[in-house]
Amino acid sequence: MNEDLSDSRVRVTLPTASRRPYLQGNLRVFVEQALRSLPKRFPGLKVVEPVIHPDRVEMVLDLQRLDEDVNRIVQSFKSEVKNLAKKEGFTQHNLWQWTHEEK
Image (cartoon, rainbow, N blue to C red; front, side, top):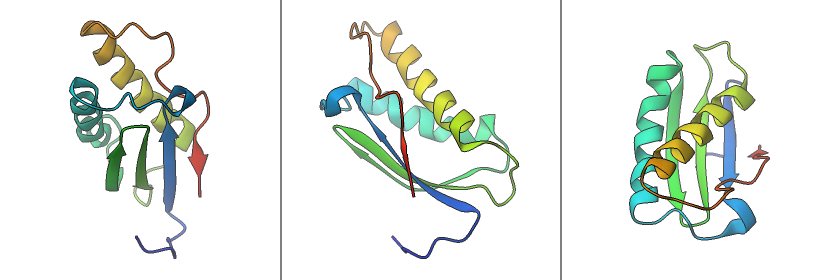
């Protein structure tokens, strides 16, 4: 990825709770689904170069055509994945670390 991100782009890393390798199998599918739905929930948002690792999701959010708070976007994404996981029987109390990393 290009390290010189424009002012409208934010690199975000979302680690799982205790960096556990939760994002495999069905949970990975739920992450993919939530990534696809983000631009629908936040029109104008572009999710660039998402990468799903077993213990984290990395992506670049392009906010050029969107006046929205990154924290709100991240929380919406995390909530959608967690709700989908709960419907499928995921029983861990925490799926995500409370915070995320931005660059």
